[in-house]
Image (tube, rainbow, N blue to C red; front, side, top):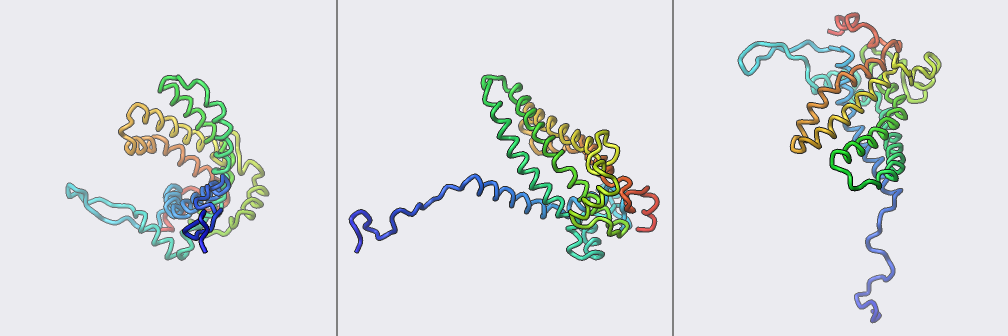
Length: 268
């Protein structure tokens, strides 16, 4: 029998729309980040192999829109098919585990640092628009730098694991074996080098900071070119990312860390 207070017979006292807790939100963000990292990993894998000069497939003959015959290097799908042919589908995810750990650490560091930075950003709300952009970009730069310093060792591990595809080495395996191997052979310098002699930390940070400032300032002055500005800034900062990745595999004991001329012929 329904009571007068609850004529519909529904259970009283059960909260219909539970508000997610901060822990639930953080967990969801971490899982989403790991998923995006896994999905985009094959694309970054192919990009890295191209960066180190690995050309396993011959160029194809094509024509331009003006009818001129030219040679085209293999695209992403052709390169990915070659990796699958050599290593199977799992081969597309070589070096993924360090990247997932890096993504998780980056999310946690950025979240914690952002909370601390926001305490100082609640003052001077009557600033001009440009001053506000500079202030917010400075805060983002601090967060980005701390995040990169915390995750760079895992970036080095991931890059070296992927670069082994060139010479078919098995020197770098799981995360723990990578840590032991790098620390035993190179010490902490294998993960961090103050003068960026080996691991490429400094060019990586410089490239990301330059990208951040250029994007935010361009967005302030030309707010209608959101997509075009990112492309332009990527072209400007790509040399820093390239140098960082090449330094991560420099003299690490795998074929791809040698002069590209020494192995490109044998790969064709």
